[in-house]
Image (cartoon, rainbow, N blue to C red; front, top):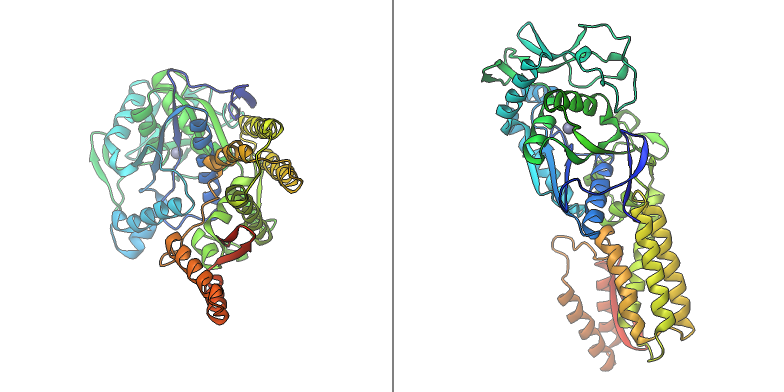
Length: 467
Ligand SMILES: [Zn+2]
């Protein structure tokens, strides 16, 4: 079975393959760098990472482009308040965002592109729209005339037929009820950054940047355009209107949107006191891989209820996975006929992959994995798991980690390396042999404090990091 995704455009689950060669041309709307990303933003980026990783696991190449919005209404307002340039204002947040991506183990897209470095491309696209009669000017600003694009509303599945022609909106973000001719180019305002261009001295509206940058790097028709569900309207609807009016071709074949995140059953908001950045959560003592696991574990089309119980459960799940990996790698299994065990691993691997092929059903994939672990532990306990079964079992675990990437613990800055832990564990063994138990206990307690658990088994001492 091929990979299937739910396409917002057709409202159907469809088989996916790239249009041209083996490369998936994919554009995702990146962050607006006016603040730290919150966990709701990061849910969307984690979904995009899972999407990217699964495409690659299935042997596709990716040409994945993500933009950074470093000019918009909110950024300008904040920079003006602080009396600094927009570049000085956005830079630290861009750095912080890339750090958060690394902390959550989100793979870097092949290209990360900034809006302010593509003003020329945006102006050219607006000029092309003007040549097609899609724009008009008013008070020095340029607007998109949506009445000239009859398909407007096809992504968000809204009928905008009854709209008042000529009504305009200048802000970048607005609700469906306020669908209007949207601004492509805003006339310069006193005290605001602007660019002097052939279409006037001013700055771009928010929507034009994604059309311009996506088509520059990926061509007229993308295989996948992804983003958070809240971007469907107006942002993605406007991207379609801008791009298709010029090219006459479909802008994206697949539109894939991740649902919202809520916190403890409620909408996340600063006023409710349930607004969290990744930094907040990590400062509370949670491991990044537990956050990643929780964000990845709910299929992207479901609302994700972020709870602290859920985070603890995620840490427990990771612990179970690591214990299983440790058992596979350190237990001594006897030689025997591996046939049944290998068949078991292959069957679970097939089911695991089938779950992800099915519109990235991460919950089902995890369900299959834990069933496999239970089953395999039972076989191990009853002596029905043999040395030759280890490699196929690890293969499934590797496949899992290729996508979920939570098995390797995050080593905190200044934390102990594996080699240091090995050395201390060996020192403790020597102390035990010399019957210096106070020293052996002290090493054990010291390691525990640093998040390392020693386990004495009949095969010797092994250690693991706490999740
Ligand atoms: Zn965008």
